[in-house]
Picture (cartoon, rainbow, N blue to C red):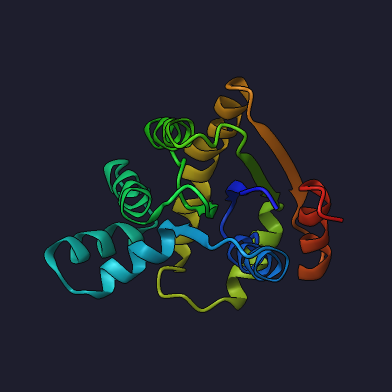
Length: 195
């Protein structure tokens, strides 16, 4: 299997993390290539939990549901690629390209590393479904204010990035995130021509 490079989009509650994990499991069974998974949200939460000065500032942004300044996701992505990427791995990126600078940084990195054929998986979910799902999830940054703030900046800051990437000629797969987890997973596999 050729190395796969994917960038995931999806509003909070869309099941992005679950779908990335299911795809990692699938690739682990179908390919002997290692996987580099850049999960910016998880890395930010880990940083928050260190209790360092940067961690405390990161926690304040996360808990308020605000978007992190672009330098931080760019730094986390760049650090992973510079220190871990050998050119052979599958790349699964989640939580990057949340603003113009982040999107350009990701796209530039993929071009630099010869992965210009990377694809985008955008998991689509209605706002009503988002709110229903998040009520069932128990994360300490899922306060009502935090959720409302993240929904707002997803629309204003994140959705335009999909159009920016479309304008750069990138392949975008819109996946219906409303059905059950396995149905969404099969839709992702079909979009990537694995089934």
